Image (cartoon, rainbow, N blue to C red; front, side, top):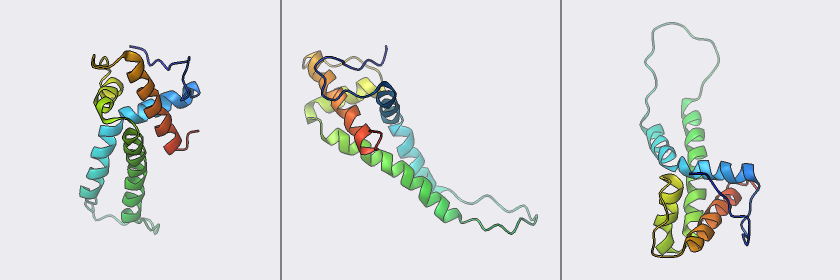
Length: 129
């Protein structure tokens, strides 16, 4: 299934590269949540007893920076998802992340419009546009 962006009557139209970038960031949501949680549980690698360079490494700051990067994207996705009516969220989410067909409880154009809205707001929240 191709990643199609509606071209007609789409007030959420994005440049192709931005649309696909936002789409793949949304698809990466589950991994980012897992990685953000795993950063908290990481422990430093054991010392092998060999001397190291005099360069100071702040592991905590590095972990905090990585977690903040994940958190920024996670929050951007969740904020954008909140802008879509509750009854369409699951259908749009599964269409993007699992590439399932839209449910039959509403028209395809309704789901497509909400999908475009979600991708647009993720791009906007992440300052891709």
